[in-house]
Length: 277
Image (spheres, rainbow, N blue to C red):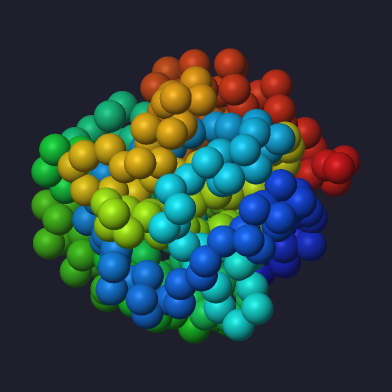
Protein backbone atom coordinates (compact mmCIF):
# COMPACT_ATOMS: atom_id res chain seq x y z
CA UNK A 1 0.00 0.00 0.00
CA UNK A 2 1.47 3.31 -1.08
CA UNK A 3 1.37 6.85 0.26
CA UNK A 4 -1.10 7.57 -2.57
CA UNK A 5 -3.47 5.00 -1.06
CA UNK A 6 -3.21 6.76 2.31
CA UNK A 7 -4.08 10.03 0.60
CA UNK A 8 -7.03 8.38 -1.16
CA UNK A 9 -8.49 7.31 2.19
CA UNK A 10 -8.11 10.86 3.43
CA UNK A 11 -9.89 12.34 0.41
CA UNK A 12 -12.93 10.02 0.44
CA UNK A 13 -14.07 9.83 4.04
CA UNK A 14 -16.98 12.16 4.74
CA UNK A 15 -17.89 12.29 8.42
CA UNK A 16 -21.55 12.79 9.49
CA UNK A 17 -20.75 15.16 12.35
CA UNK A 18 -24.19 16.69 12.70
CA UNK A 19 -25.26 14.17 15.35
CA UNK A 20 -22.33 15.26 17.53
CA UNK A 21 -22.17 19.02 17.15
CA UNK A 22 -25.19 20.25 19.12
CA UNK A 23 -24.89 18.05 22.25
CA UNK A 24 -21.13 18.57 22.43
CA UNK A 25 -21.42 22.34 22.08
CA UNK A 26 -23.40 22.48 25.32
CA UNK A 27 -21.05 20.22 27.28
CA UNK A 28 -18.27 21.28 29.62
CA UNK A 29 -14.80 20.78 28.15
CA UNK A 30 -11.51 19.27 29.26
CA UNK A 31 -8.01 19.79 27.87
CA UNK A 32 -5.77 17.00 26.68
CA UNK A 33 -3.37 17.14 29.64
CA UNK A 34 -6.24 17.02 32.14
CA UNK A 35 -7.87 14.15 30.24
CA UNK A 36 -4.68 12.10 30.29
CA UNK A 37 -4.11 12.87 33.97
CA UNK A 38 -7.64 11.76 34.86
CA UNK A 39 -7.91 8.70 32.62
CA UNK A 40 -4.83 7.78 30.61
CA UNK A 41 -5.97 4.13 30.45
CA UNK A 42 -3.13 2.70 28.42
CA UNK A 43 -4.07 -0.58 30.12
CA UNK A 44 -7.84 -0.91 30.06
CA UNK A 45 -10.97 -2.88 29.26
CA UNK A 46 -12.54 -1.82 25.97
CA UNK A 47 -16.21 -2.37 25.17
CA UNK A 48 -17.41 -1.49 21.67
CA UNK A 49 -20.90 -0.79 20.43
CA UNK A 50 -22.44 -0.08 17.03
CA UNK A 51 -25.05 2.64 17.49
CA UNK A 52 -27.25 4.23 14.83
CA UNK A 53 -26.00 7.75 14.21
CA UNK A 54 -29.46 9.17 14.90
CA UNK A 55 -29.37 7.59 18.41
CA UNK A 56 -25.99 9.07 19.33
CA UNK A 57 -27.44 12.50 20.05
CA UNK A 58 -29.88 11.06 22.61
CA UNK A 59 -27.08 9.13 24.31
CA UNK A 60 -24.83 12.17 24.56
CA UNK A 61 -27.58 14.24 26.17
CA UNK A 62 -28.20 11.44 28.70
CA UNK A 63 -24.60 11.18 29.96
CA UNK A 64 -23.88 12.23 33.57
CA UNK A 65 -23.89 15.97 34.16
CA UNK A 66 -20.17 16.04 35.01
CA UNK A 67 -19.15 14.51 31.66
CA UNK A 68 -16.60 16.60 29.75
CA UNK A 69 -15.64 16.57 26.08
CA UNK A 70 -12.06 16.90 24.92
CA UNK A 71 -11.46 20.33 23.41
CA UNK A 72 -8.29 21.45 21.67
CA UNK A 73 -8.35 25.02 20.41
CA UNK A 74 -11.93 25.36 19.16
CA UNK A 75 -12.36 21.72 18.12
CA UNK A 76 -14.43 19.04 19.85
CA UNK A 77 -14.49 16.56 16.95
CA UNK A 78 -11.20 15.47 15.43
CA UNK A 79 -10.16 13.70 12.23
CA UNK A 80 -8.12 10.52 12.70
CA UNK A 81 -6.23 8.36 10.24
CA UNK A 82 -4.73 4.98 11.12
CA UNK A 83 -2.47 2.81 8.98
CA UNK A 84 -2.32 -0.85 10.09
CA UNK A 85 0.70 -3.03 9.40
CA UNK A 86 0.87 -6.80 9.05
CA UNK A 87 2.98 -9.56 7.55
CA UNK A 88 2.54 -10.91 4.01
CA UNK A 89 0.41 -13.76 5.40
CA UNK A 90 -1.51 -11.45 7.77
CA UNK A 91 -0.30 -13.06 10.99
CA UNK A 92 -1.69 -10.24 13.18
CA UNK A 93 -5.11 -10.69 11.57
CA UNK A 94 -5.00 -14.48 11.87
CA UNK A 95 -3.95 -14.42 15.53
CA UNK A 96 -7.02 -12.29 16.25
CA UNK A 97 -9.29 -14.40 14.04
CA UNK A 98 -8.32 -17.56 15.92
CA UNK A 99 -8.52 -15.84 19.34
CA UNK A 100 -4.92 -16.45 20.30
CA UNK A 101 -4.14 -15.12 23.74
CA UNK A 102 -0.92 -13.55 22.54
CA UNK A 103 -1.83 -11.28 19.66
CA UNK A 104 -0.91 -7.81 18.53
CA UNK A 105 -1.64 -4.84 16.30
CA UNK A 106 0.84 -2.37 14.89
CA UNK A 107 -0.39 0.92 13.48
CA UNK A 108 0.41 4.55 13.01
CA UNK A 109 -2.22 6.98 14.20
CA UNK A 110 -2.29 10.46 12.73
CA UNK A 111 -4.24 13.33 14.26
CA UNK A 112 -5.02 15.18 11.06
CA UNK A 113 -6.07 18.43 12.72
CA UNK A 114 -2.81 18.88 14.65
CA UNK A 115 -0.46 16.91 12.40
CA UNK A 116 0.71 14.69 15.26
CA UNK A 117 1.59 11.08 14.46
CA UNK A 118 2.31 8.10 16.72
CA UNK A 119 3.46 4.54 16.17
CA UNK A 120 1.44 2.21 18.40
CA UNK A 121 1.66 -1.43 19.42
CA UNK A 122 -1.40 -2.97 21.04
CA UNK A 123 -1.22 -6.32 22.84
CA UNK A 124 -3.36 -8.32 25.25
CA UNK A 125 -2.76 -8.07 28.97
CA UNK A 126 -4.16 -10.15 31.84
CA UNK A 127 -7.90 -10.84 32.03
CA UNK A 128 -8.60 -9.50 28.57
CA UNK A 129 -7.18 -6.01 29.08
CA UNK A 130 -5.73 -4.04 26.19
CA UNK A 131 -2.18 -2.70 26.57
CA UNK A 132 -1.17 0.13 24.23
CA UNK A 133 2.37 1.45 23.95
CA UNK A 134 3.42 4.16 21.55
CA UNK A 135 6.15 6.54 20.44
CA UNK A 136 6.14 9.67 18.30
CA UNK A 137 6.50 8.93 14.58
CA UNK A 138 7.33 11.19 11.60
CA UNK A 139 4.09 12.02 9.82
CA UNK A 140 5.76 11.74 6.43
CA UNK A 141 6.38 8.05 7.20
CA UNK A 142 2.96 7.16 8.54
CA UNK A 143 2.69 4.39 5.94
CA UNK A 144 6.18 3.09 6.82
CA UNK A 145 7.03 1.35 10.09
CA UNK A 146 10.80 1.49 9.48
CA UNK A 147 11.62 4.57 11.63
CA UNK A 148 10.12 2.83 14.68
CA UNK A 149 10.99 -0.77 13.89
CA UNK A 150 13.24 -1.16 16.93
CA UNK A 151 10.42 0.03 19.20
CA UNK A 152 8.00 -2.45 17.63
CA UNK A 153 10.45 -5.33 17.99
CA UNK A 154 11.29 -4.51 21.61
CA UNK A 155 7.61 -4.21 22.53
CA UNK A 156 6.68 -7.53 20.93
CA UNK A 157 9.60 -9.28 22.62
CA UNK A 158 8.60 -7.82 26.00
CA UNK A 159 5.04 -9.03 25.48
CA UNK A 160 6.04 -12.65 24.75
CA UNK A 161 5.96 -12.39 20.96
CA UNK A 162 9.70 -12.64 20.37
CA UNK A 163 9.26 -14.79 17.25
CA UNK A 164 7.57 -11.85 15.56
CA UNK A 165 10.05 -9.21 16.62
CA UNK A 166 11.94 -9.10 13.32
CA UNK A 167 9.32 -10.15 10.78
CA UNK A 168 8.73 -7.67 7.92
CA UNK A 169 5.63 -5.51 8.31
CA UNK A 170 3.88 -3.66 5.49
CA UNK A 171 0.83 -1.35 5.39
CA UNK A 172 -2.33 -3.38 4.88
CA UNK A 173 -5.29 -1.17 5.78
CA UNK A 174 -6.04 2.55 6.20
CA UNK A 175 -8.95 3.74 8.31
CA UNK A 176 -10.26 7.25 8.68
CA UNK A 177 -13.02 8.66 10.84
CA UNK A 178 -14.05 11.61 12.99
CA UNK A 179 -13.93 11.17 16.77
CA UNK A 180 -15.23 12.87 19.89
CA UNK A 181 -13.62 11.85 23.20
CA UNK A 182 -15.44 12.26 26.50
CA UNK A 183 -14.29 11.99 30.11
CA UNK A 184 -16.51 10.52 32.82
CA UNK A 185 -14.66 11.67 35.94
CA UNK A 186 -16.69 9.71 38.49
CA UNK A 187 -15.29 6.43 37.12
CA UNK A 188 -12.08 7.85 35.60
CA UNK A 189 -13.24 6.37 32.31
CA UNK A 190 -13.46 7.53 28.72
CA UNK A 191 -15.98 7.28 25.93
CA UNK A 192 -15.19 7.74 22.25
CA UNK A 193 -17.70 8.20 19.44
CA UNK A 194 -16.45 7.60 15.90
CA UNK A 195 -18.46 8.56 12.82
CA UNK A 196 -17.77 8.49 9.09
CA UNK A 197 -15.58 5.38 9.26
CA UNK A 198 -13.89 4.40 6.00
CA UNK A 199 -11.77 1.30 5.38
CA UNK A 200 -9.28 1.22 2.47
CA UNK A 201 -6.99 -1.72 1.67
CA UNK A 202 -5.94 -0.31 -1.69
CA UNK A 203 -8.68 -2.15 -3.56
CA UNK A 204 -12.27 -0.90 -3.17
CA UNK A 205 -12.73 1.32 -0.08
CA UNK A 206 -15.82 0.88 2.06
CA UNK A 207 -17.68 3.51 4.08
CA UNK A 208 -19.76 2.69 7.17
CA UNK A 209 -22.77 4.97 6.93
CA UNK A 210 -25.53 5.52 9.48
CA UNK A 211 -23.64 3.71 12.27
CA UNK A 212 -21.28 5.14 14.89
CA UNK A 213 -18.64 3.07 16.65
CA UNK A 214 -18.96 3.88 20.35
CA UNK A 215 -16.23 2.61 22.64
CA UNK A 216 -15.94 2.73 26.41
CA UNK A 217 -12.49 2.55 27.97
CA UNK A 218 -12.46 1.83 31.67
CA UNK A 219 -10.86 -0.24 34.40
CA UNK A 220 -12.25 -3.62 35.39
CA UNK A 221 -15.79 -2.36 36.11
CA UNK A 222 -18.36 -1.02 33.68
CA UNK A 223 -18.64 2.75 33.39
CA UNK A 224 -21.74 4.93 33.61
CA UNK A 225 -21.62 5.12 29.81
CA UNK A 226 -21.83 1.31 29.56
CA UNK A 227 -24.84 1.24 31.85
CA UNK A 228 -26.48 3.98 29.82
CA UNK A 229 -25.88 2.11 26.57
CA UNK A 230 -27.32 -1.07 28.07
CA UNK A 231 -30.39 0.82 29.29
CA UNK A 232 -30.99 2.01 25.71
CA UNK A 233 -30.79 -1.54 24.37
CA UNK A 234 -27.24 -1.46 23.03
CA UNK A 235 -24.95 -4.37 23.81
CA UNK A 236 -21.20 -4.76 23.22
CA UNK A 237 -20.28 -6.24 19.86
CA UNK A 238 -17.17 -8.00 18.67
CA UNK A 239 -15.54 -5.50 16.35
CA UNK A 240 -12.00 -4.45 15.52
CA UNK A 241 -11.45 -1.57 13.14
CA UNK A 242 -8.56 -3.53 11.66
CA UNK A 243 -9.70 -7.15 11.68
CA UNK A 244 -13.42 -6.68 11.12
CA UNK A 245 -12.77 -4.05 8.48
CA UNK A 246 -10.33 -6.29 6.63
CA UNK A 247 -12.82 -9.16 6.81
CA UNK A 248 -15.50 -6.93 5.26
CA UNK A 249 -13.12 -6.01 2.45
CA UNK A 250 -11.77 -9.53 1.91
CA UNK A 251 -14.50 -12.16 2.36
CA UNK A 252 -12.03 -14.94 1.59
CA UNK A 253 -10.33 -14.45 4.99
CA UNK A 254 -11.32 -16.56 8.02
CA UNK A 255 -13.82 -14.45 9.96
CA UNK A 256 -15.89 -16.81 12.12
CA UNK A 257 -15.18 -14.67 15.17
CA UNK A 258 -16.82 -11.63 13.57
CA UNK A 259 -19.53 -13.27 11.45
CA UNK A 260 -22.38 -12.10 13.66
CA UNK A 261 -21.11 -8.51 13.68
CA UNK A 262 -20.41 -8.54 9.95
CA UNK A 263 -23.72 -9.97 8.75
CA UNK A 264 -26.09 -8.53 11.34
CA UNK A 265 -24.59 -5.08 11.80
CA UNK A 266 -21.88 -4.04 9.36
CA UNK A 267 -22.46 -5.37 5.87
CA UNK A 268 -26.01 -3.98 5.60
CA UNK A 269 -24.57 -0.53 6.29
CA UNK A 270 -21.37 -0.39 4.22
CA UNK A 271 -21.19 1.16 0.77
CA UNK A 272 -18.33 1.92 -1.62
CA UNK A 273 -16.57 4.99 -0.27
CA UNK A 274 -16.94 6.78 -3.61
CA UNK A 275 -20.76 6.64 -3.31
CA UNK A 276 -21.04 7.40 0.44
CA UNK A 277 -23.43 10.15 1.30
